[in-house]
Length: 479
Image (cartoon, rainbow, N blue to C red; front, top):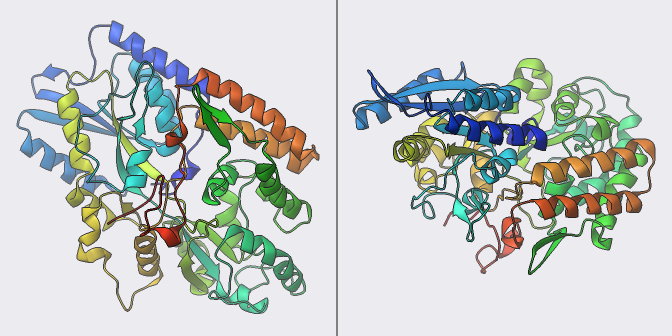
């Protein structure tokens, strides 16, 4: 199970269009679609992402509860690897067997919904889920007007920071003194680099060459971090969103990361590799801090026990808004389901407070359900291991965390465009301003072909410090 949703593999637009065409073709076959009635009663098909074999018992229990409440209904559950989802969806839809309920990451959900893969849901979702998690499930579809609920948030993984206290101490720092913002880390990275380089590198306590890192090229986190700073690279007119990624404040912000990379304050992997390099370098003692989902603690404990022993949990790194990024897993109901009511009921059941709380007891994830947070399982405790500390830090962050994923069908394409531009700048020495101007033209072209959307599709929360003072935009409020 990959609980850091932002690591989900990107599906290109051509693949998504093939899937949409297959869904339409599947409907024309006139038979074999999900939700059919056979000798066992009504059959629903459910696809999840990367849960087996760790959560077989949990999923079987949830399915049994649903079947008991809906006599005559049989749920067939399939678990799909992340990198196989597109291929399997295309094949199933082409054969007229599109699944009734599909688990998708927040990154690709809006794209498939805009292409007609999912049906609008007529459910009272507003009071049930964390607003920021629900917002990215509320989309405009082609031919539609107002935003509609096109999926239900299942679970979330707000980021926390893991810090190697031994490495920080050798550079004269502590977990308490370490900056909590991305810009603060950039400011401190040079001083840390000098101190750490004097002591050499090595696993566990061997010096740690870099204070931190972030993916800038592959799986670039620049769009997420930029929105976390309150920098919104869009404007809006009567025709919809207008890209403004070449605006001076955007160029200045991105330029700080480019300058830090060029000065050697970030590892080369920041320009060439995605999230994988963060955990690998942290467990090898080459990074003093990493901001990620708490699920990776178990990997660190198994692969590098000496690093695990030196690790302390602190709040996730944020932009100046003070809001950690919160990836979201979504459940959507296929637009081709022959039993949309039952399929919606199944998604509703799996995302219920009781179901989510039970899931969180088994995995280092957080619920999207507001009611779940009143369960004693999420209460503060005076003692507990590192995983328990990470869980409690995640609970605290839910009050301000935001899903900094734009609810746009072309968002994955826009991110890929920026990533390509960033690689040219970071690795080939291309001019930043000209590269962002080229990216901006690509963004405007993508928006012209997309479902018409406004600024309400872009996360724009107020500062976390003003959470109780009527901040606007998409806010991860729990009360």
